[in-house]
Image (cartoon, rainbow, N blue to C red; front, side, top):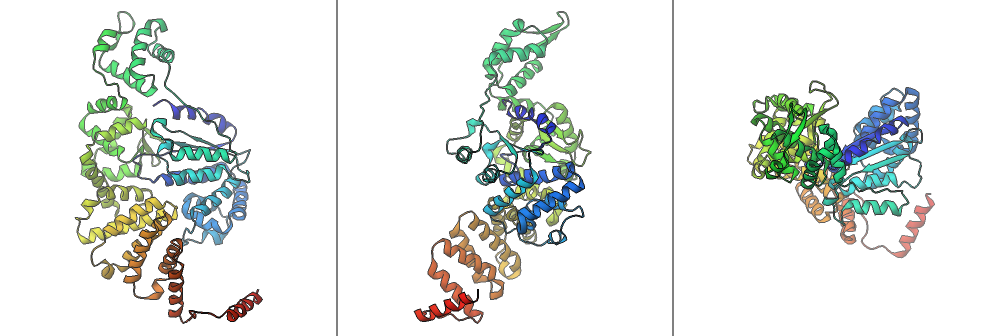
Length: 554
């Protein structure tokens, strides 16, 4: 609440005047998106801005450069950046790229970083600089910052990118990924400016109150001193504290004196919390029950909630007045509409004015009730959308459902399988986005929801869940877990031709564990099953002859 985001927003105008593109996103403690998805989304949003700002001829030039720079990885990048495909849907794109619909993402993290470096070399330039602003980095993960690091430290230095990140220093320890991120950037020669934004000094608080109450600074100085020592100059807390004083009639407008008046002694005696979160929670507690309920629902989605989510939830009798109450919460100053001034616009997002307001709203839900609360929201989204839930709400629906996994396990068999399929879809999409941590959590719940006879009656679903879960575990470095799951699939699946991908990943896990002999024996057995018999022992002369024959082929 010290004004970090507001300060950064003041840099937007000169950058836009200079012809720059600005993309801002924020990490969220309880967001339904994974942290890595937030990092990916800034590049995806950039594709939209590029398409809006450039002529058809300029877009054609960008397309040609992207094909040349990124090459064969471009179709794979379409899965990670959906709007990149839209950038190519202008009639001038190479048709063979657009037609490749069913292609596995196939990009590991290093490959993704390399592709993004090429992407930014093409998209950004001195005449078209790009600014990325990521708020609340204290909730960022290693992969997210790793991707940003790759773009900023590109050794070819052909991109023009200005990155701004903000975080709460009181929530970051010395071993946090942010500290390693900045140290590493400096070692790569990337110029960094670090700023610490503290609260207002007492003179600033006095100036703020003087301006707000339209009185001379000398008149309101005693009040300002009292407010400063209660709030320590935190801007958000200062404003909320002043509003509370007005609401409690401790600051009133006197028509007789024609100015605002107050009594310092009464203010000192009043029991007003010295904690901004408690102050906001108390303020919300005075709202009508239905409006509190609307704020609780919105807080479960993180810092912002889409119109689509509001529309679907409003179809349920339980949340029928959600849209109406959210509009009232906007008028109360807790929320704001982003993209439009009402919820009638399809692109409208409902956003909390500040993280502390969202935290206060989420705090209205008792800890013991949160699992059930998220589960109920997920069930409404699932009931009205089913397995074919729209892409925009896929992760959100699965996130809420999985918060109540203990409740899901009590569902009838048919519904358990249906939700397992939804988790498979979310896990597959997360892997395509290289968000392996999120994929692992989705797929793990999917496996838990399988029935005892799933290998007989739901074999395809079981194989896909186990295989992708082992793939995510392998990517996260949990080699032993991946190996155990792959062994399970190998034992359950009968036909060898259905196990080639599984064996390929299994052999990679063996090599990662330096179990070379078992890896070799596994390969030799598979080849023998395919009619290619390799001898266990080879004579040296035969090895040399075979090697010479192989070399001669090239």
